[in-house]
Amino acid sequence: MTSSSNEILRLASADNFRDVAGPGYATLDGARVRQGVFYRSNELRLTDADHGTLAGLGLRAVLDLRSALEIERHPDVEVPGADWHNFDVSGIPMDLVAELRDRRSAVELMDRVYRSFVESEDAREEFGGLFHQLATGGPQLFHCTAGKDRTGWVAALLLHIAGVDDPTIESDYLLTNELTSSSRARVEAEIVSLLGAEHVASYEPTLVADLEYLRSGYDAVEQEYGDRTGYLHDGLGLDDATLETLRDLLRDQ
Image (tube, rainbow, N blue to C red; front, side, top):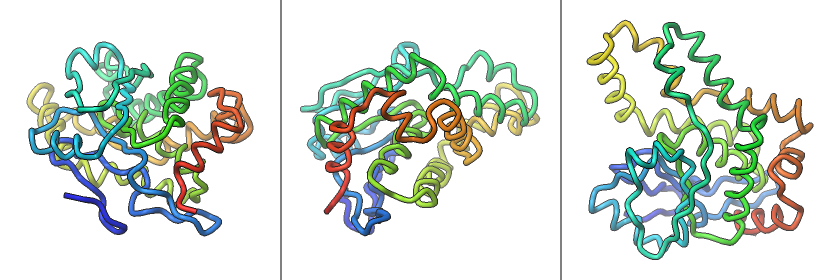
């Protein structure tokens, strides 16, 4: 299956795989985000058919945002011609998830996860390294486990760099919930099987993308750096030349 101006390439075995550009999102100054440069995904546990599709994209690199333990549990398949890089950013702490007993505490946990993308020096260093790697040119793919939090944060920042407006960025971020409905249902079924149906509501906030989480990250950005440009510059260590390179890569002029 190939992508076009109004179609998003999909992989059945990685349901949150997609082009960061979407269908070619419009920018505030009338340009379009260029397809085929950066892709985002959940972990790469692929069928043979999907592996062949991914190999056909001509990827230069796969950028894995997962921890060593996540990678050990489900290592990526190798993609021919693509170098593999690990940028270890802490995701949802599973030890704390296991203790969740109500929805509100789960939402608070997710808010903390997104704030850590800004407040954690380790996270900023890893994200900075990832953006510097992306600036070497496409096509490249970045991913985490579910492709919604760490990956969603990077995609939102890339679209911001490209000049896409916030409502579009937020809509793209929430697209995760539509694309991953079947895999989320499987996780919920596992929760029912292991813990009982009464626990699904408590865990559900950790399984979805929610604008509250994204905005918690933005709030931390404003508090620490003033705005996203300040975060990219001073938090992630991206100079003007790197940001301009990313912007040029992302945009059809």
